[in-house]
Length: 74
Image 1: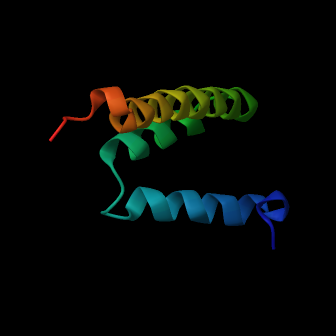
Image 2: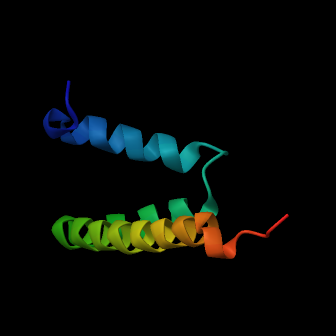
């Protein structure tokens, strides 16, 4: 079943699993708890924007790290 067809109970079960799992970061759990208090469409829009910004920053850092001008000459 695709994520587009997940029902409300299944979505809540997945969220609860993340919140109870010890290996997920406190930052993620706190963000998820706060998102549950918001309008779901607004929370989704914010999450998508956050993803775009973090992805762009990470891509730039990787490119900077791999750039020949940044590598030490041996």
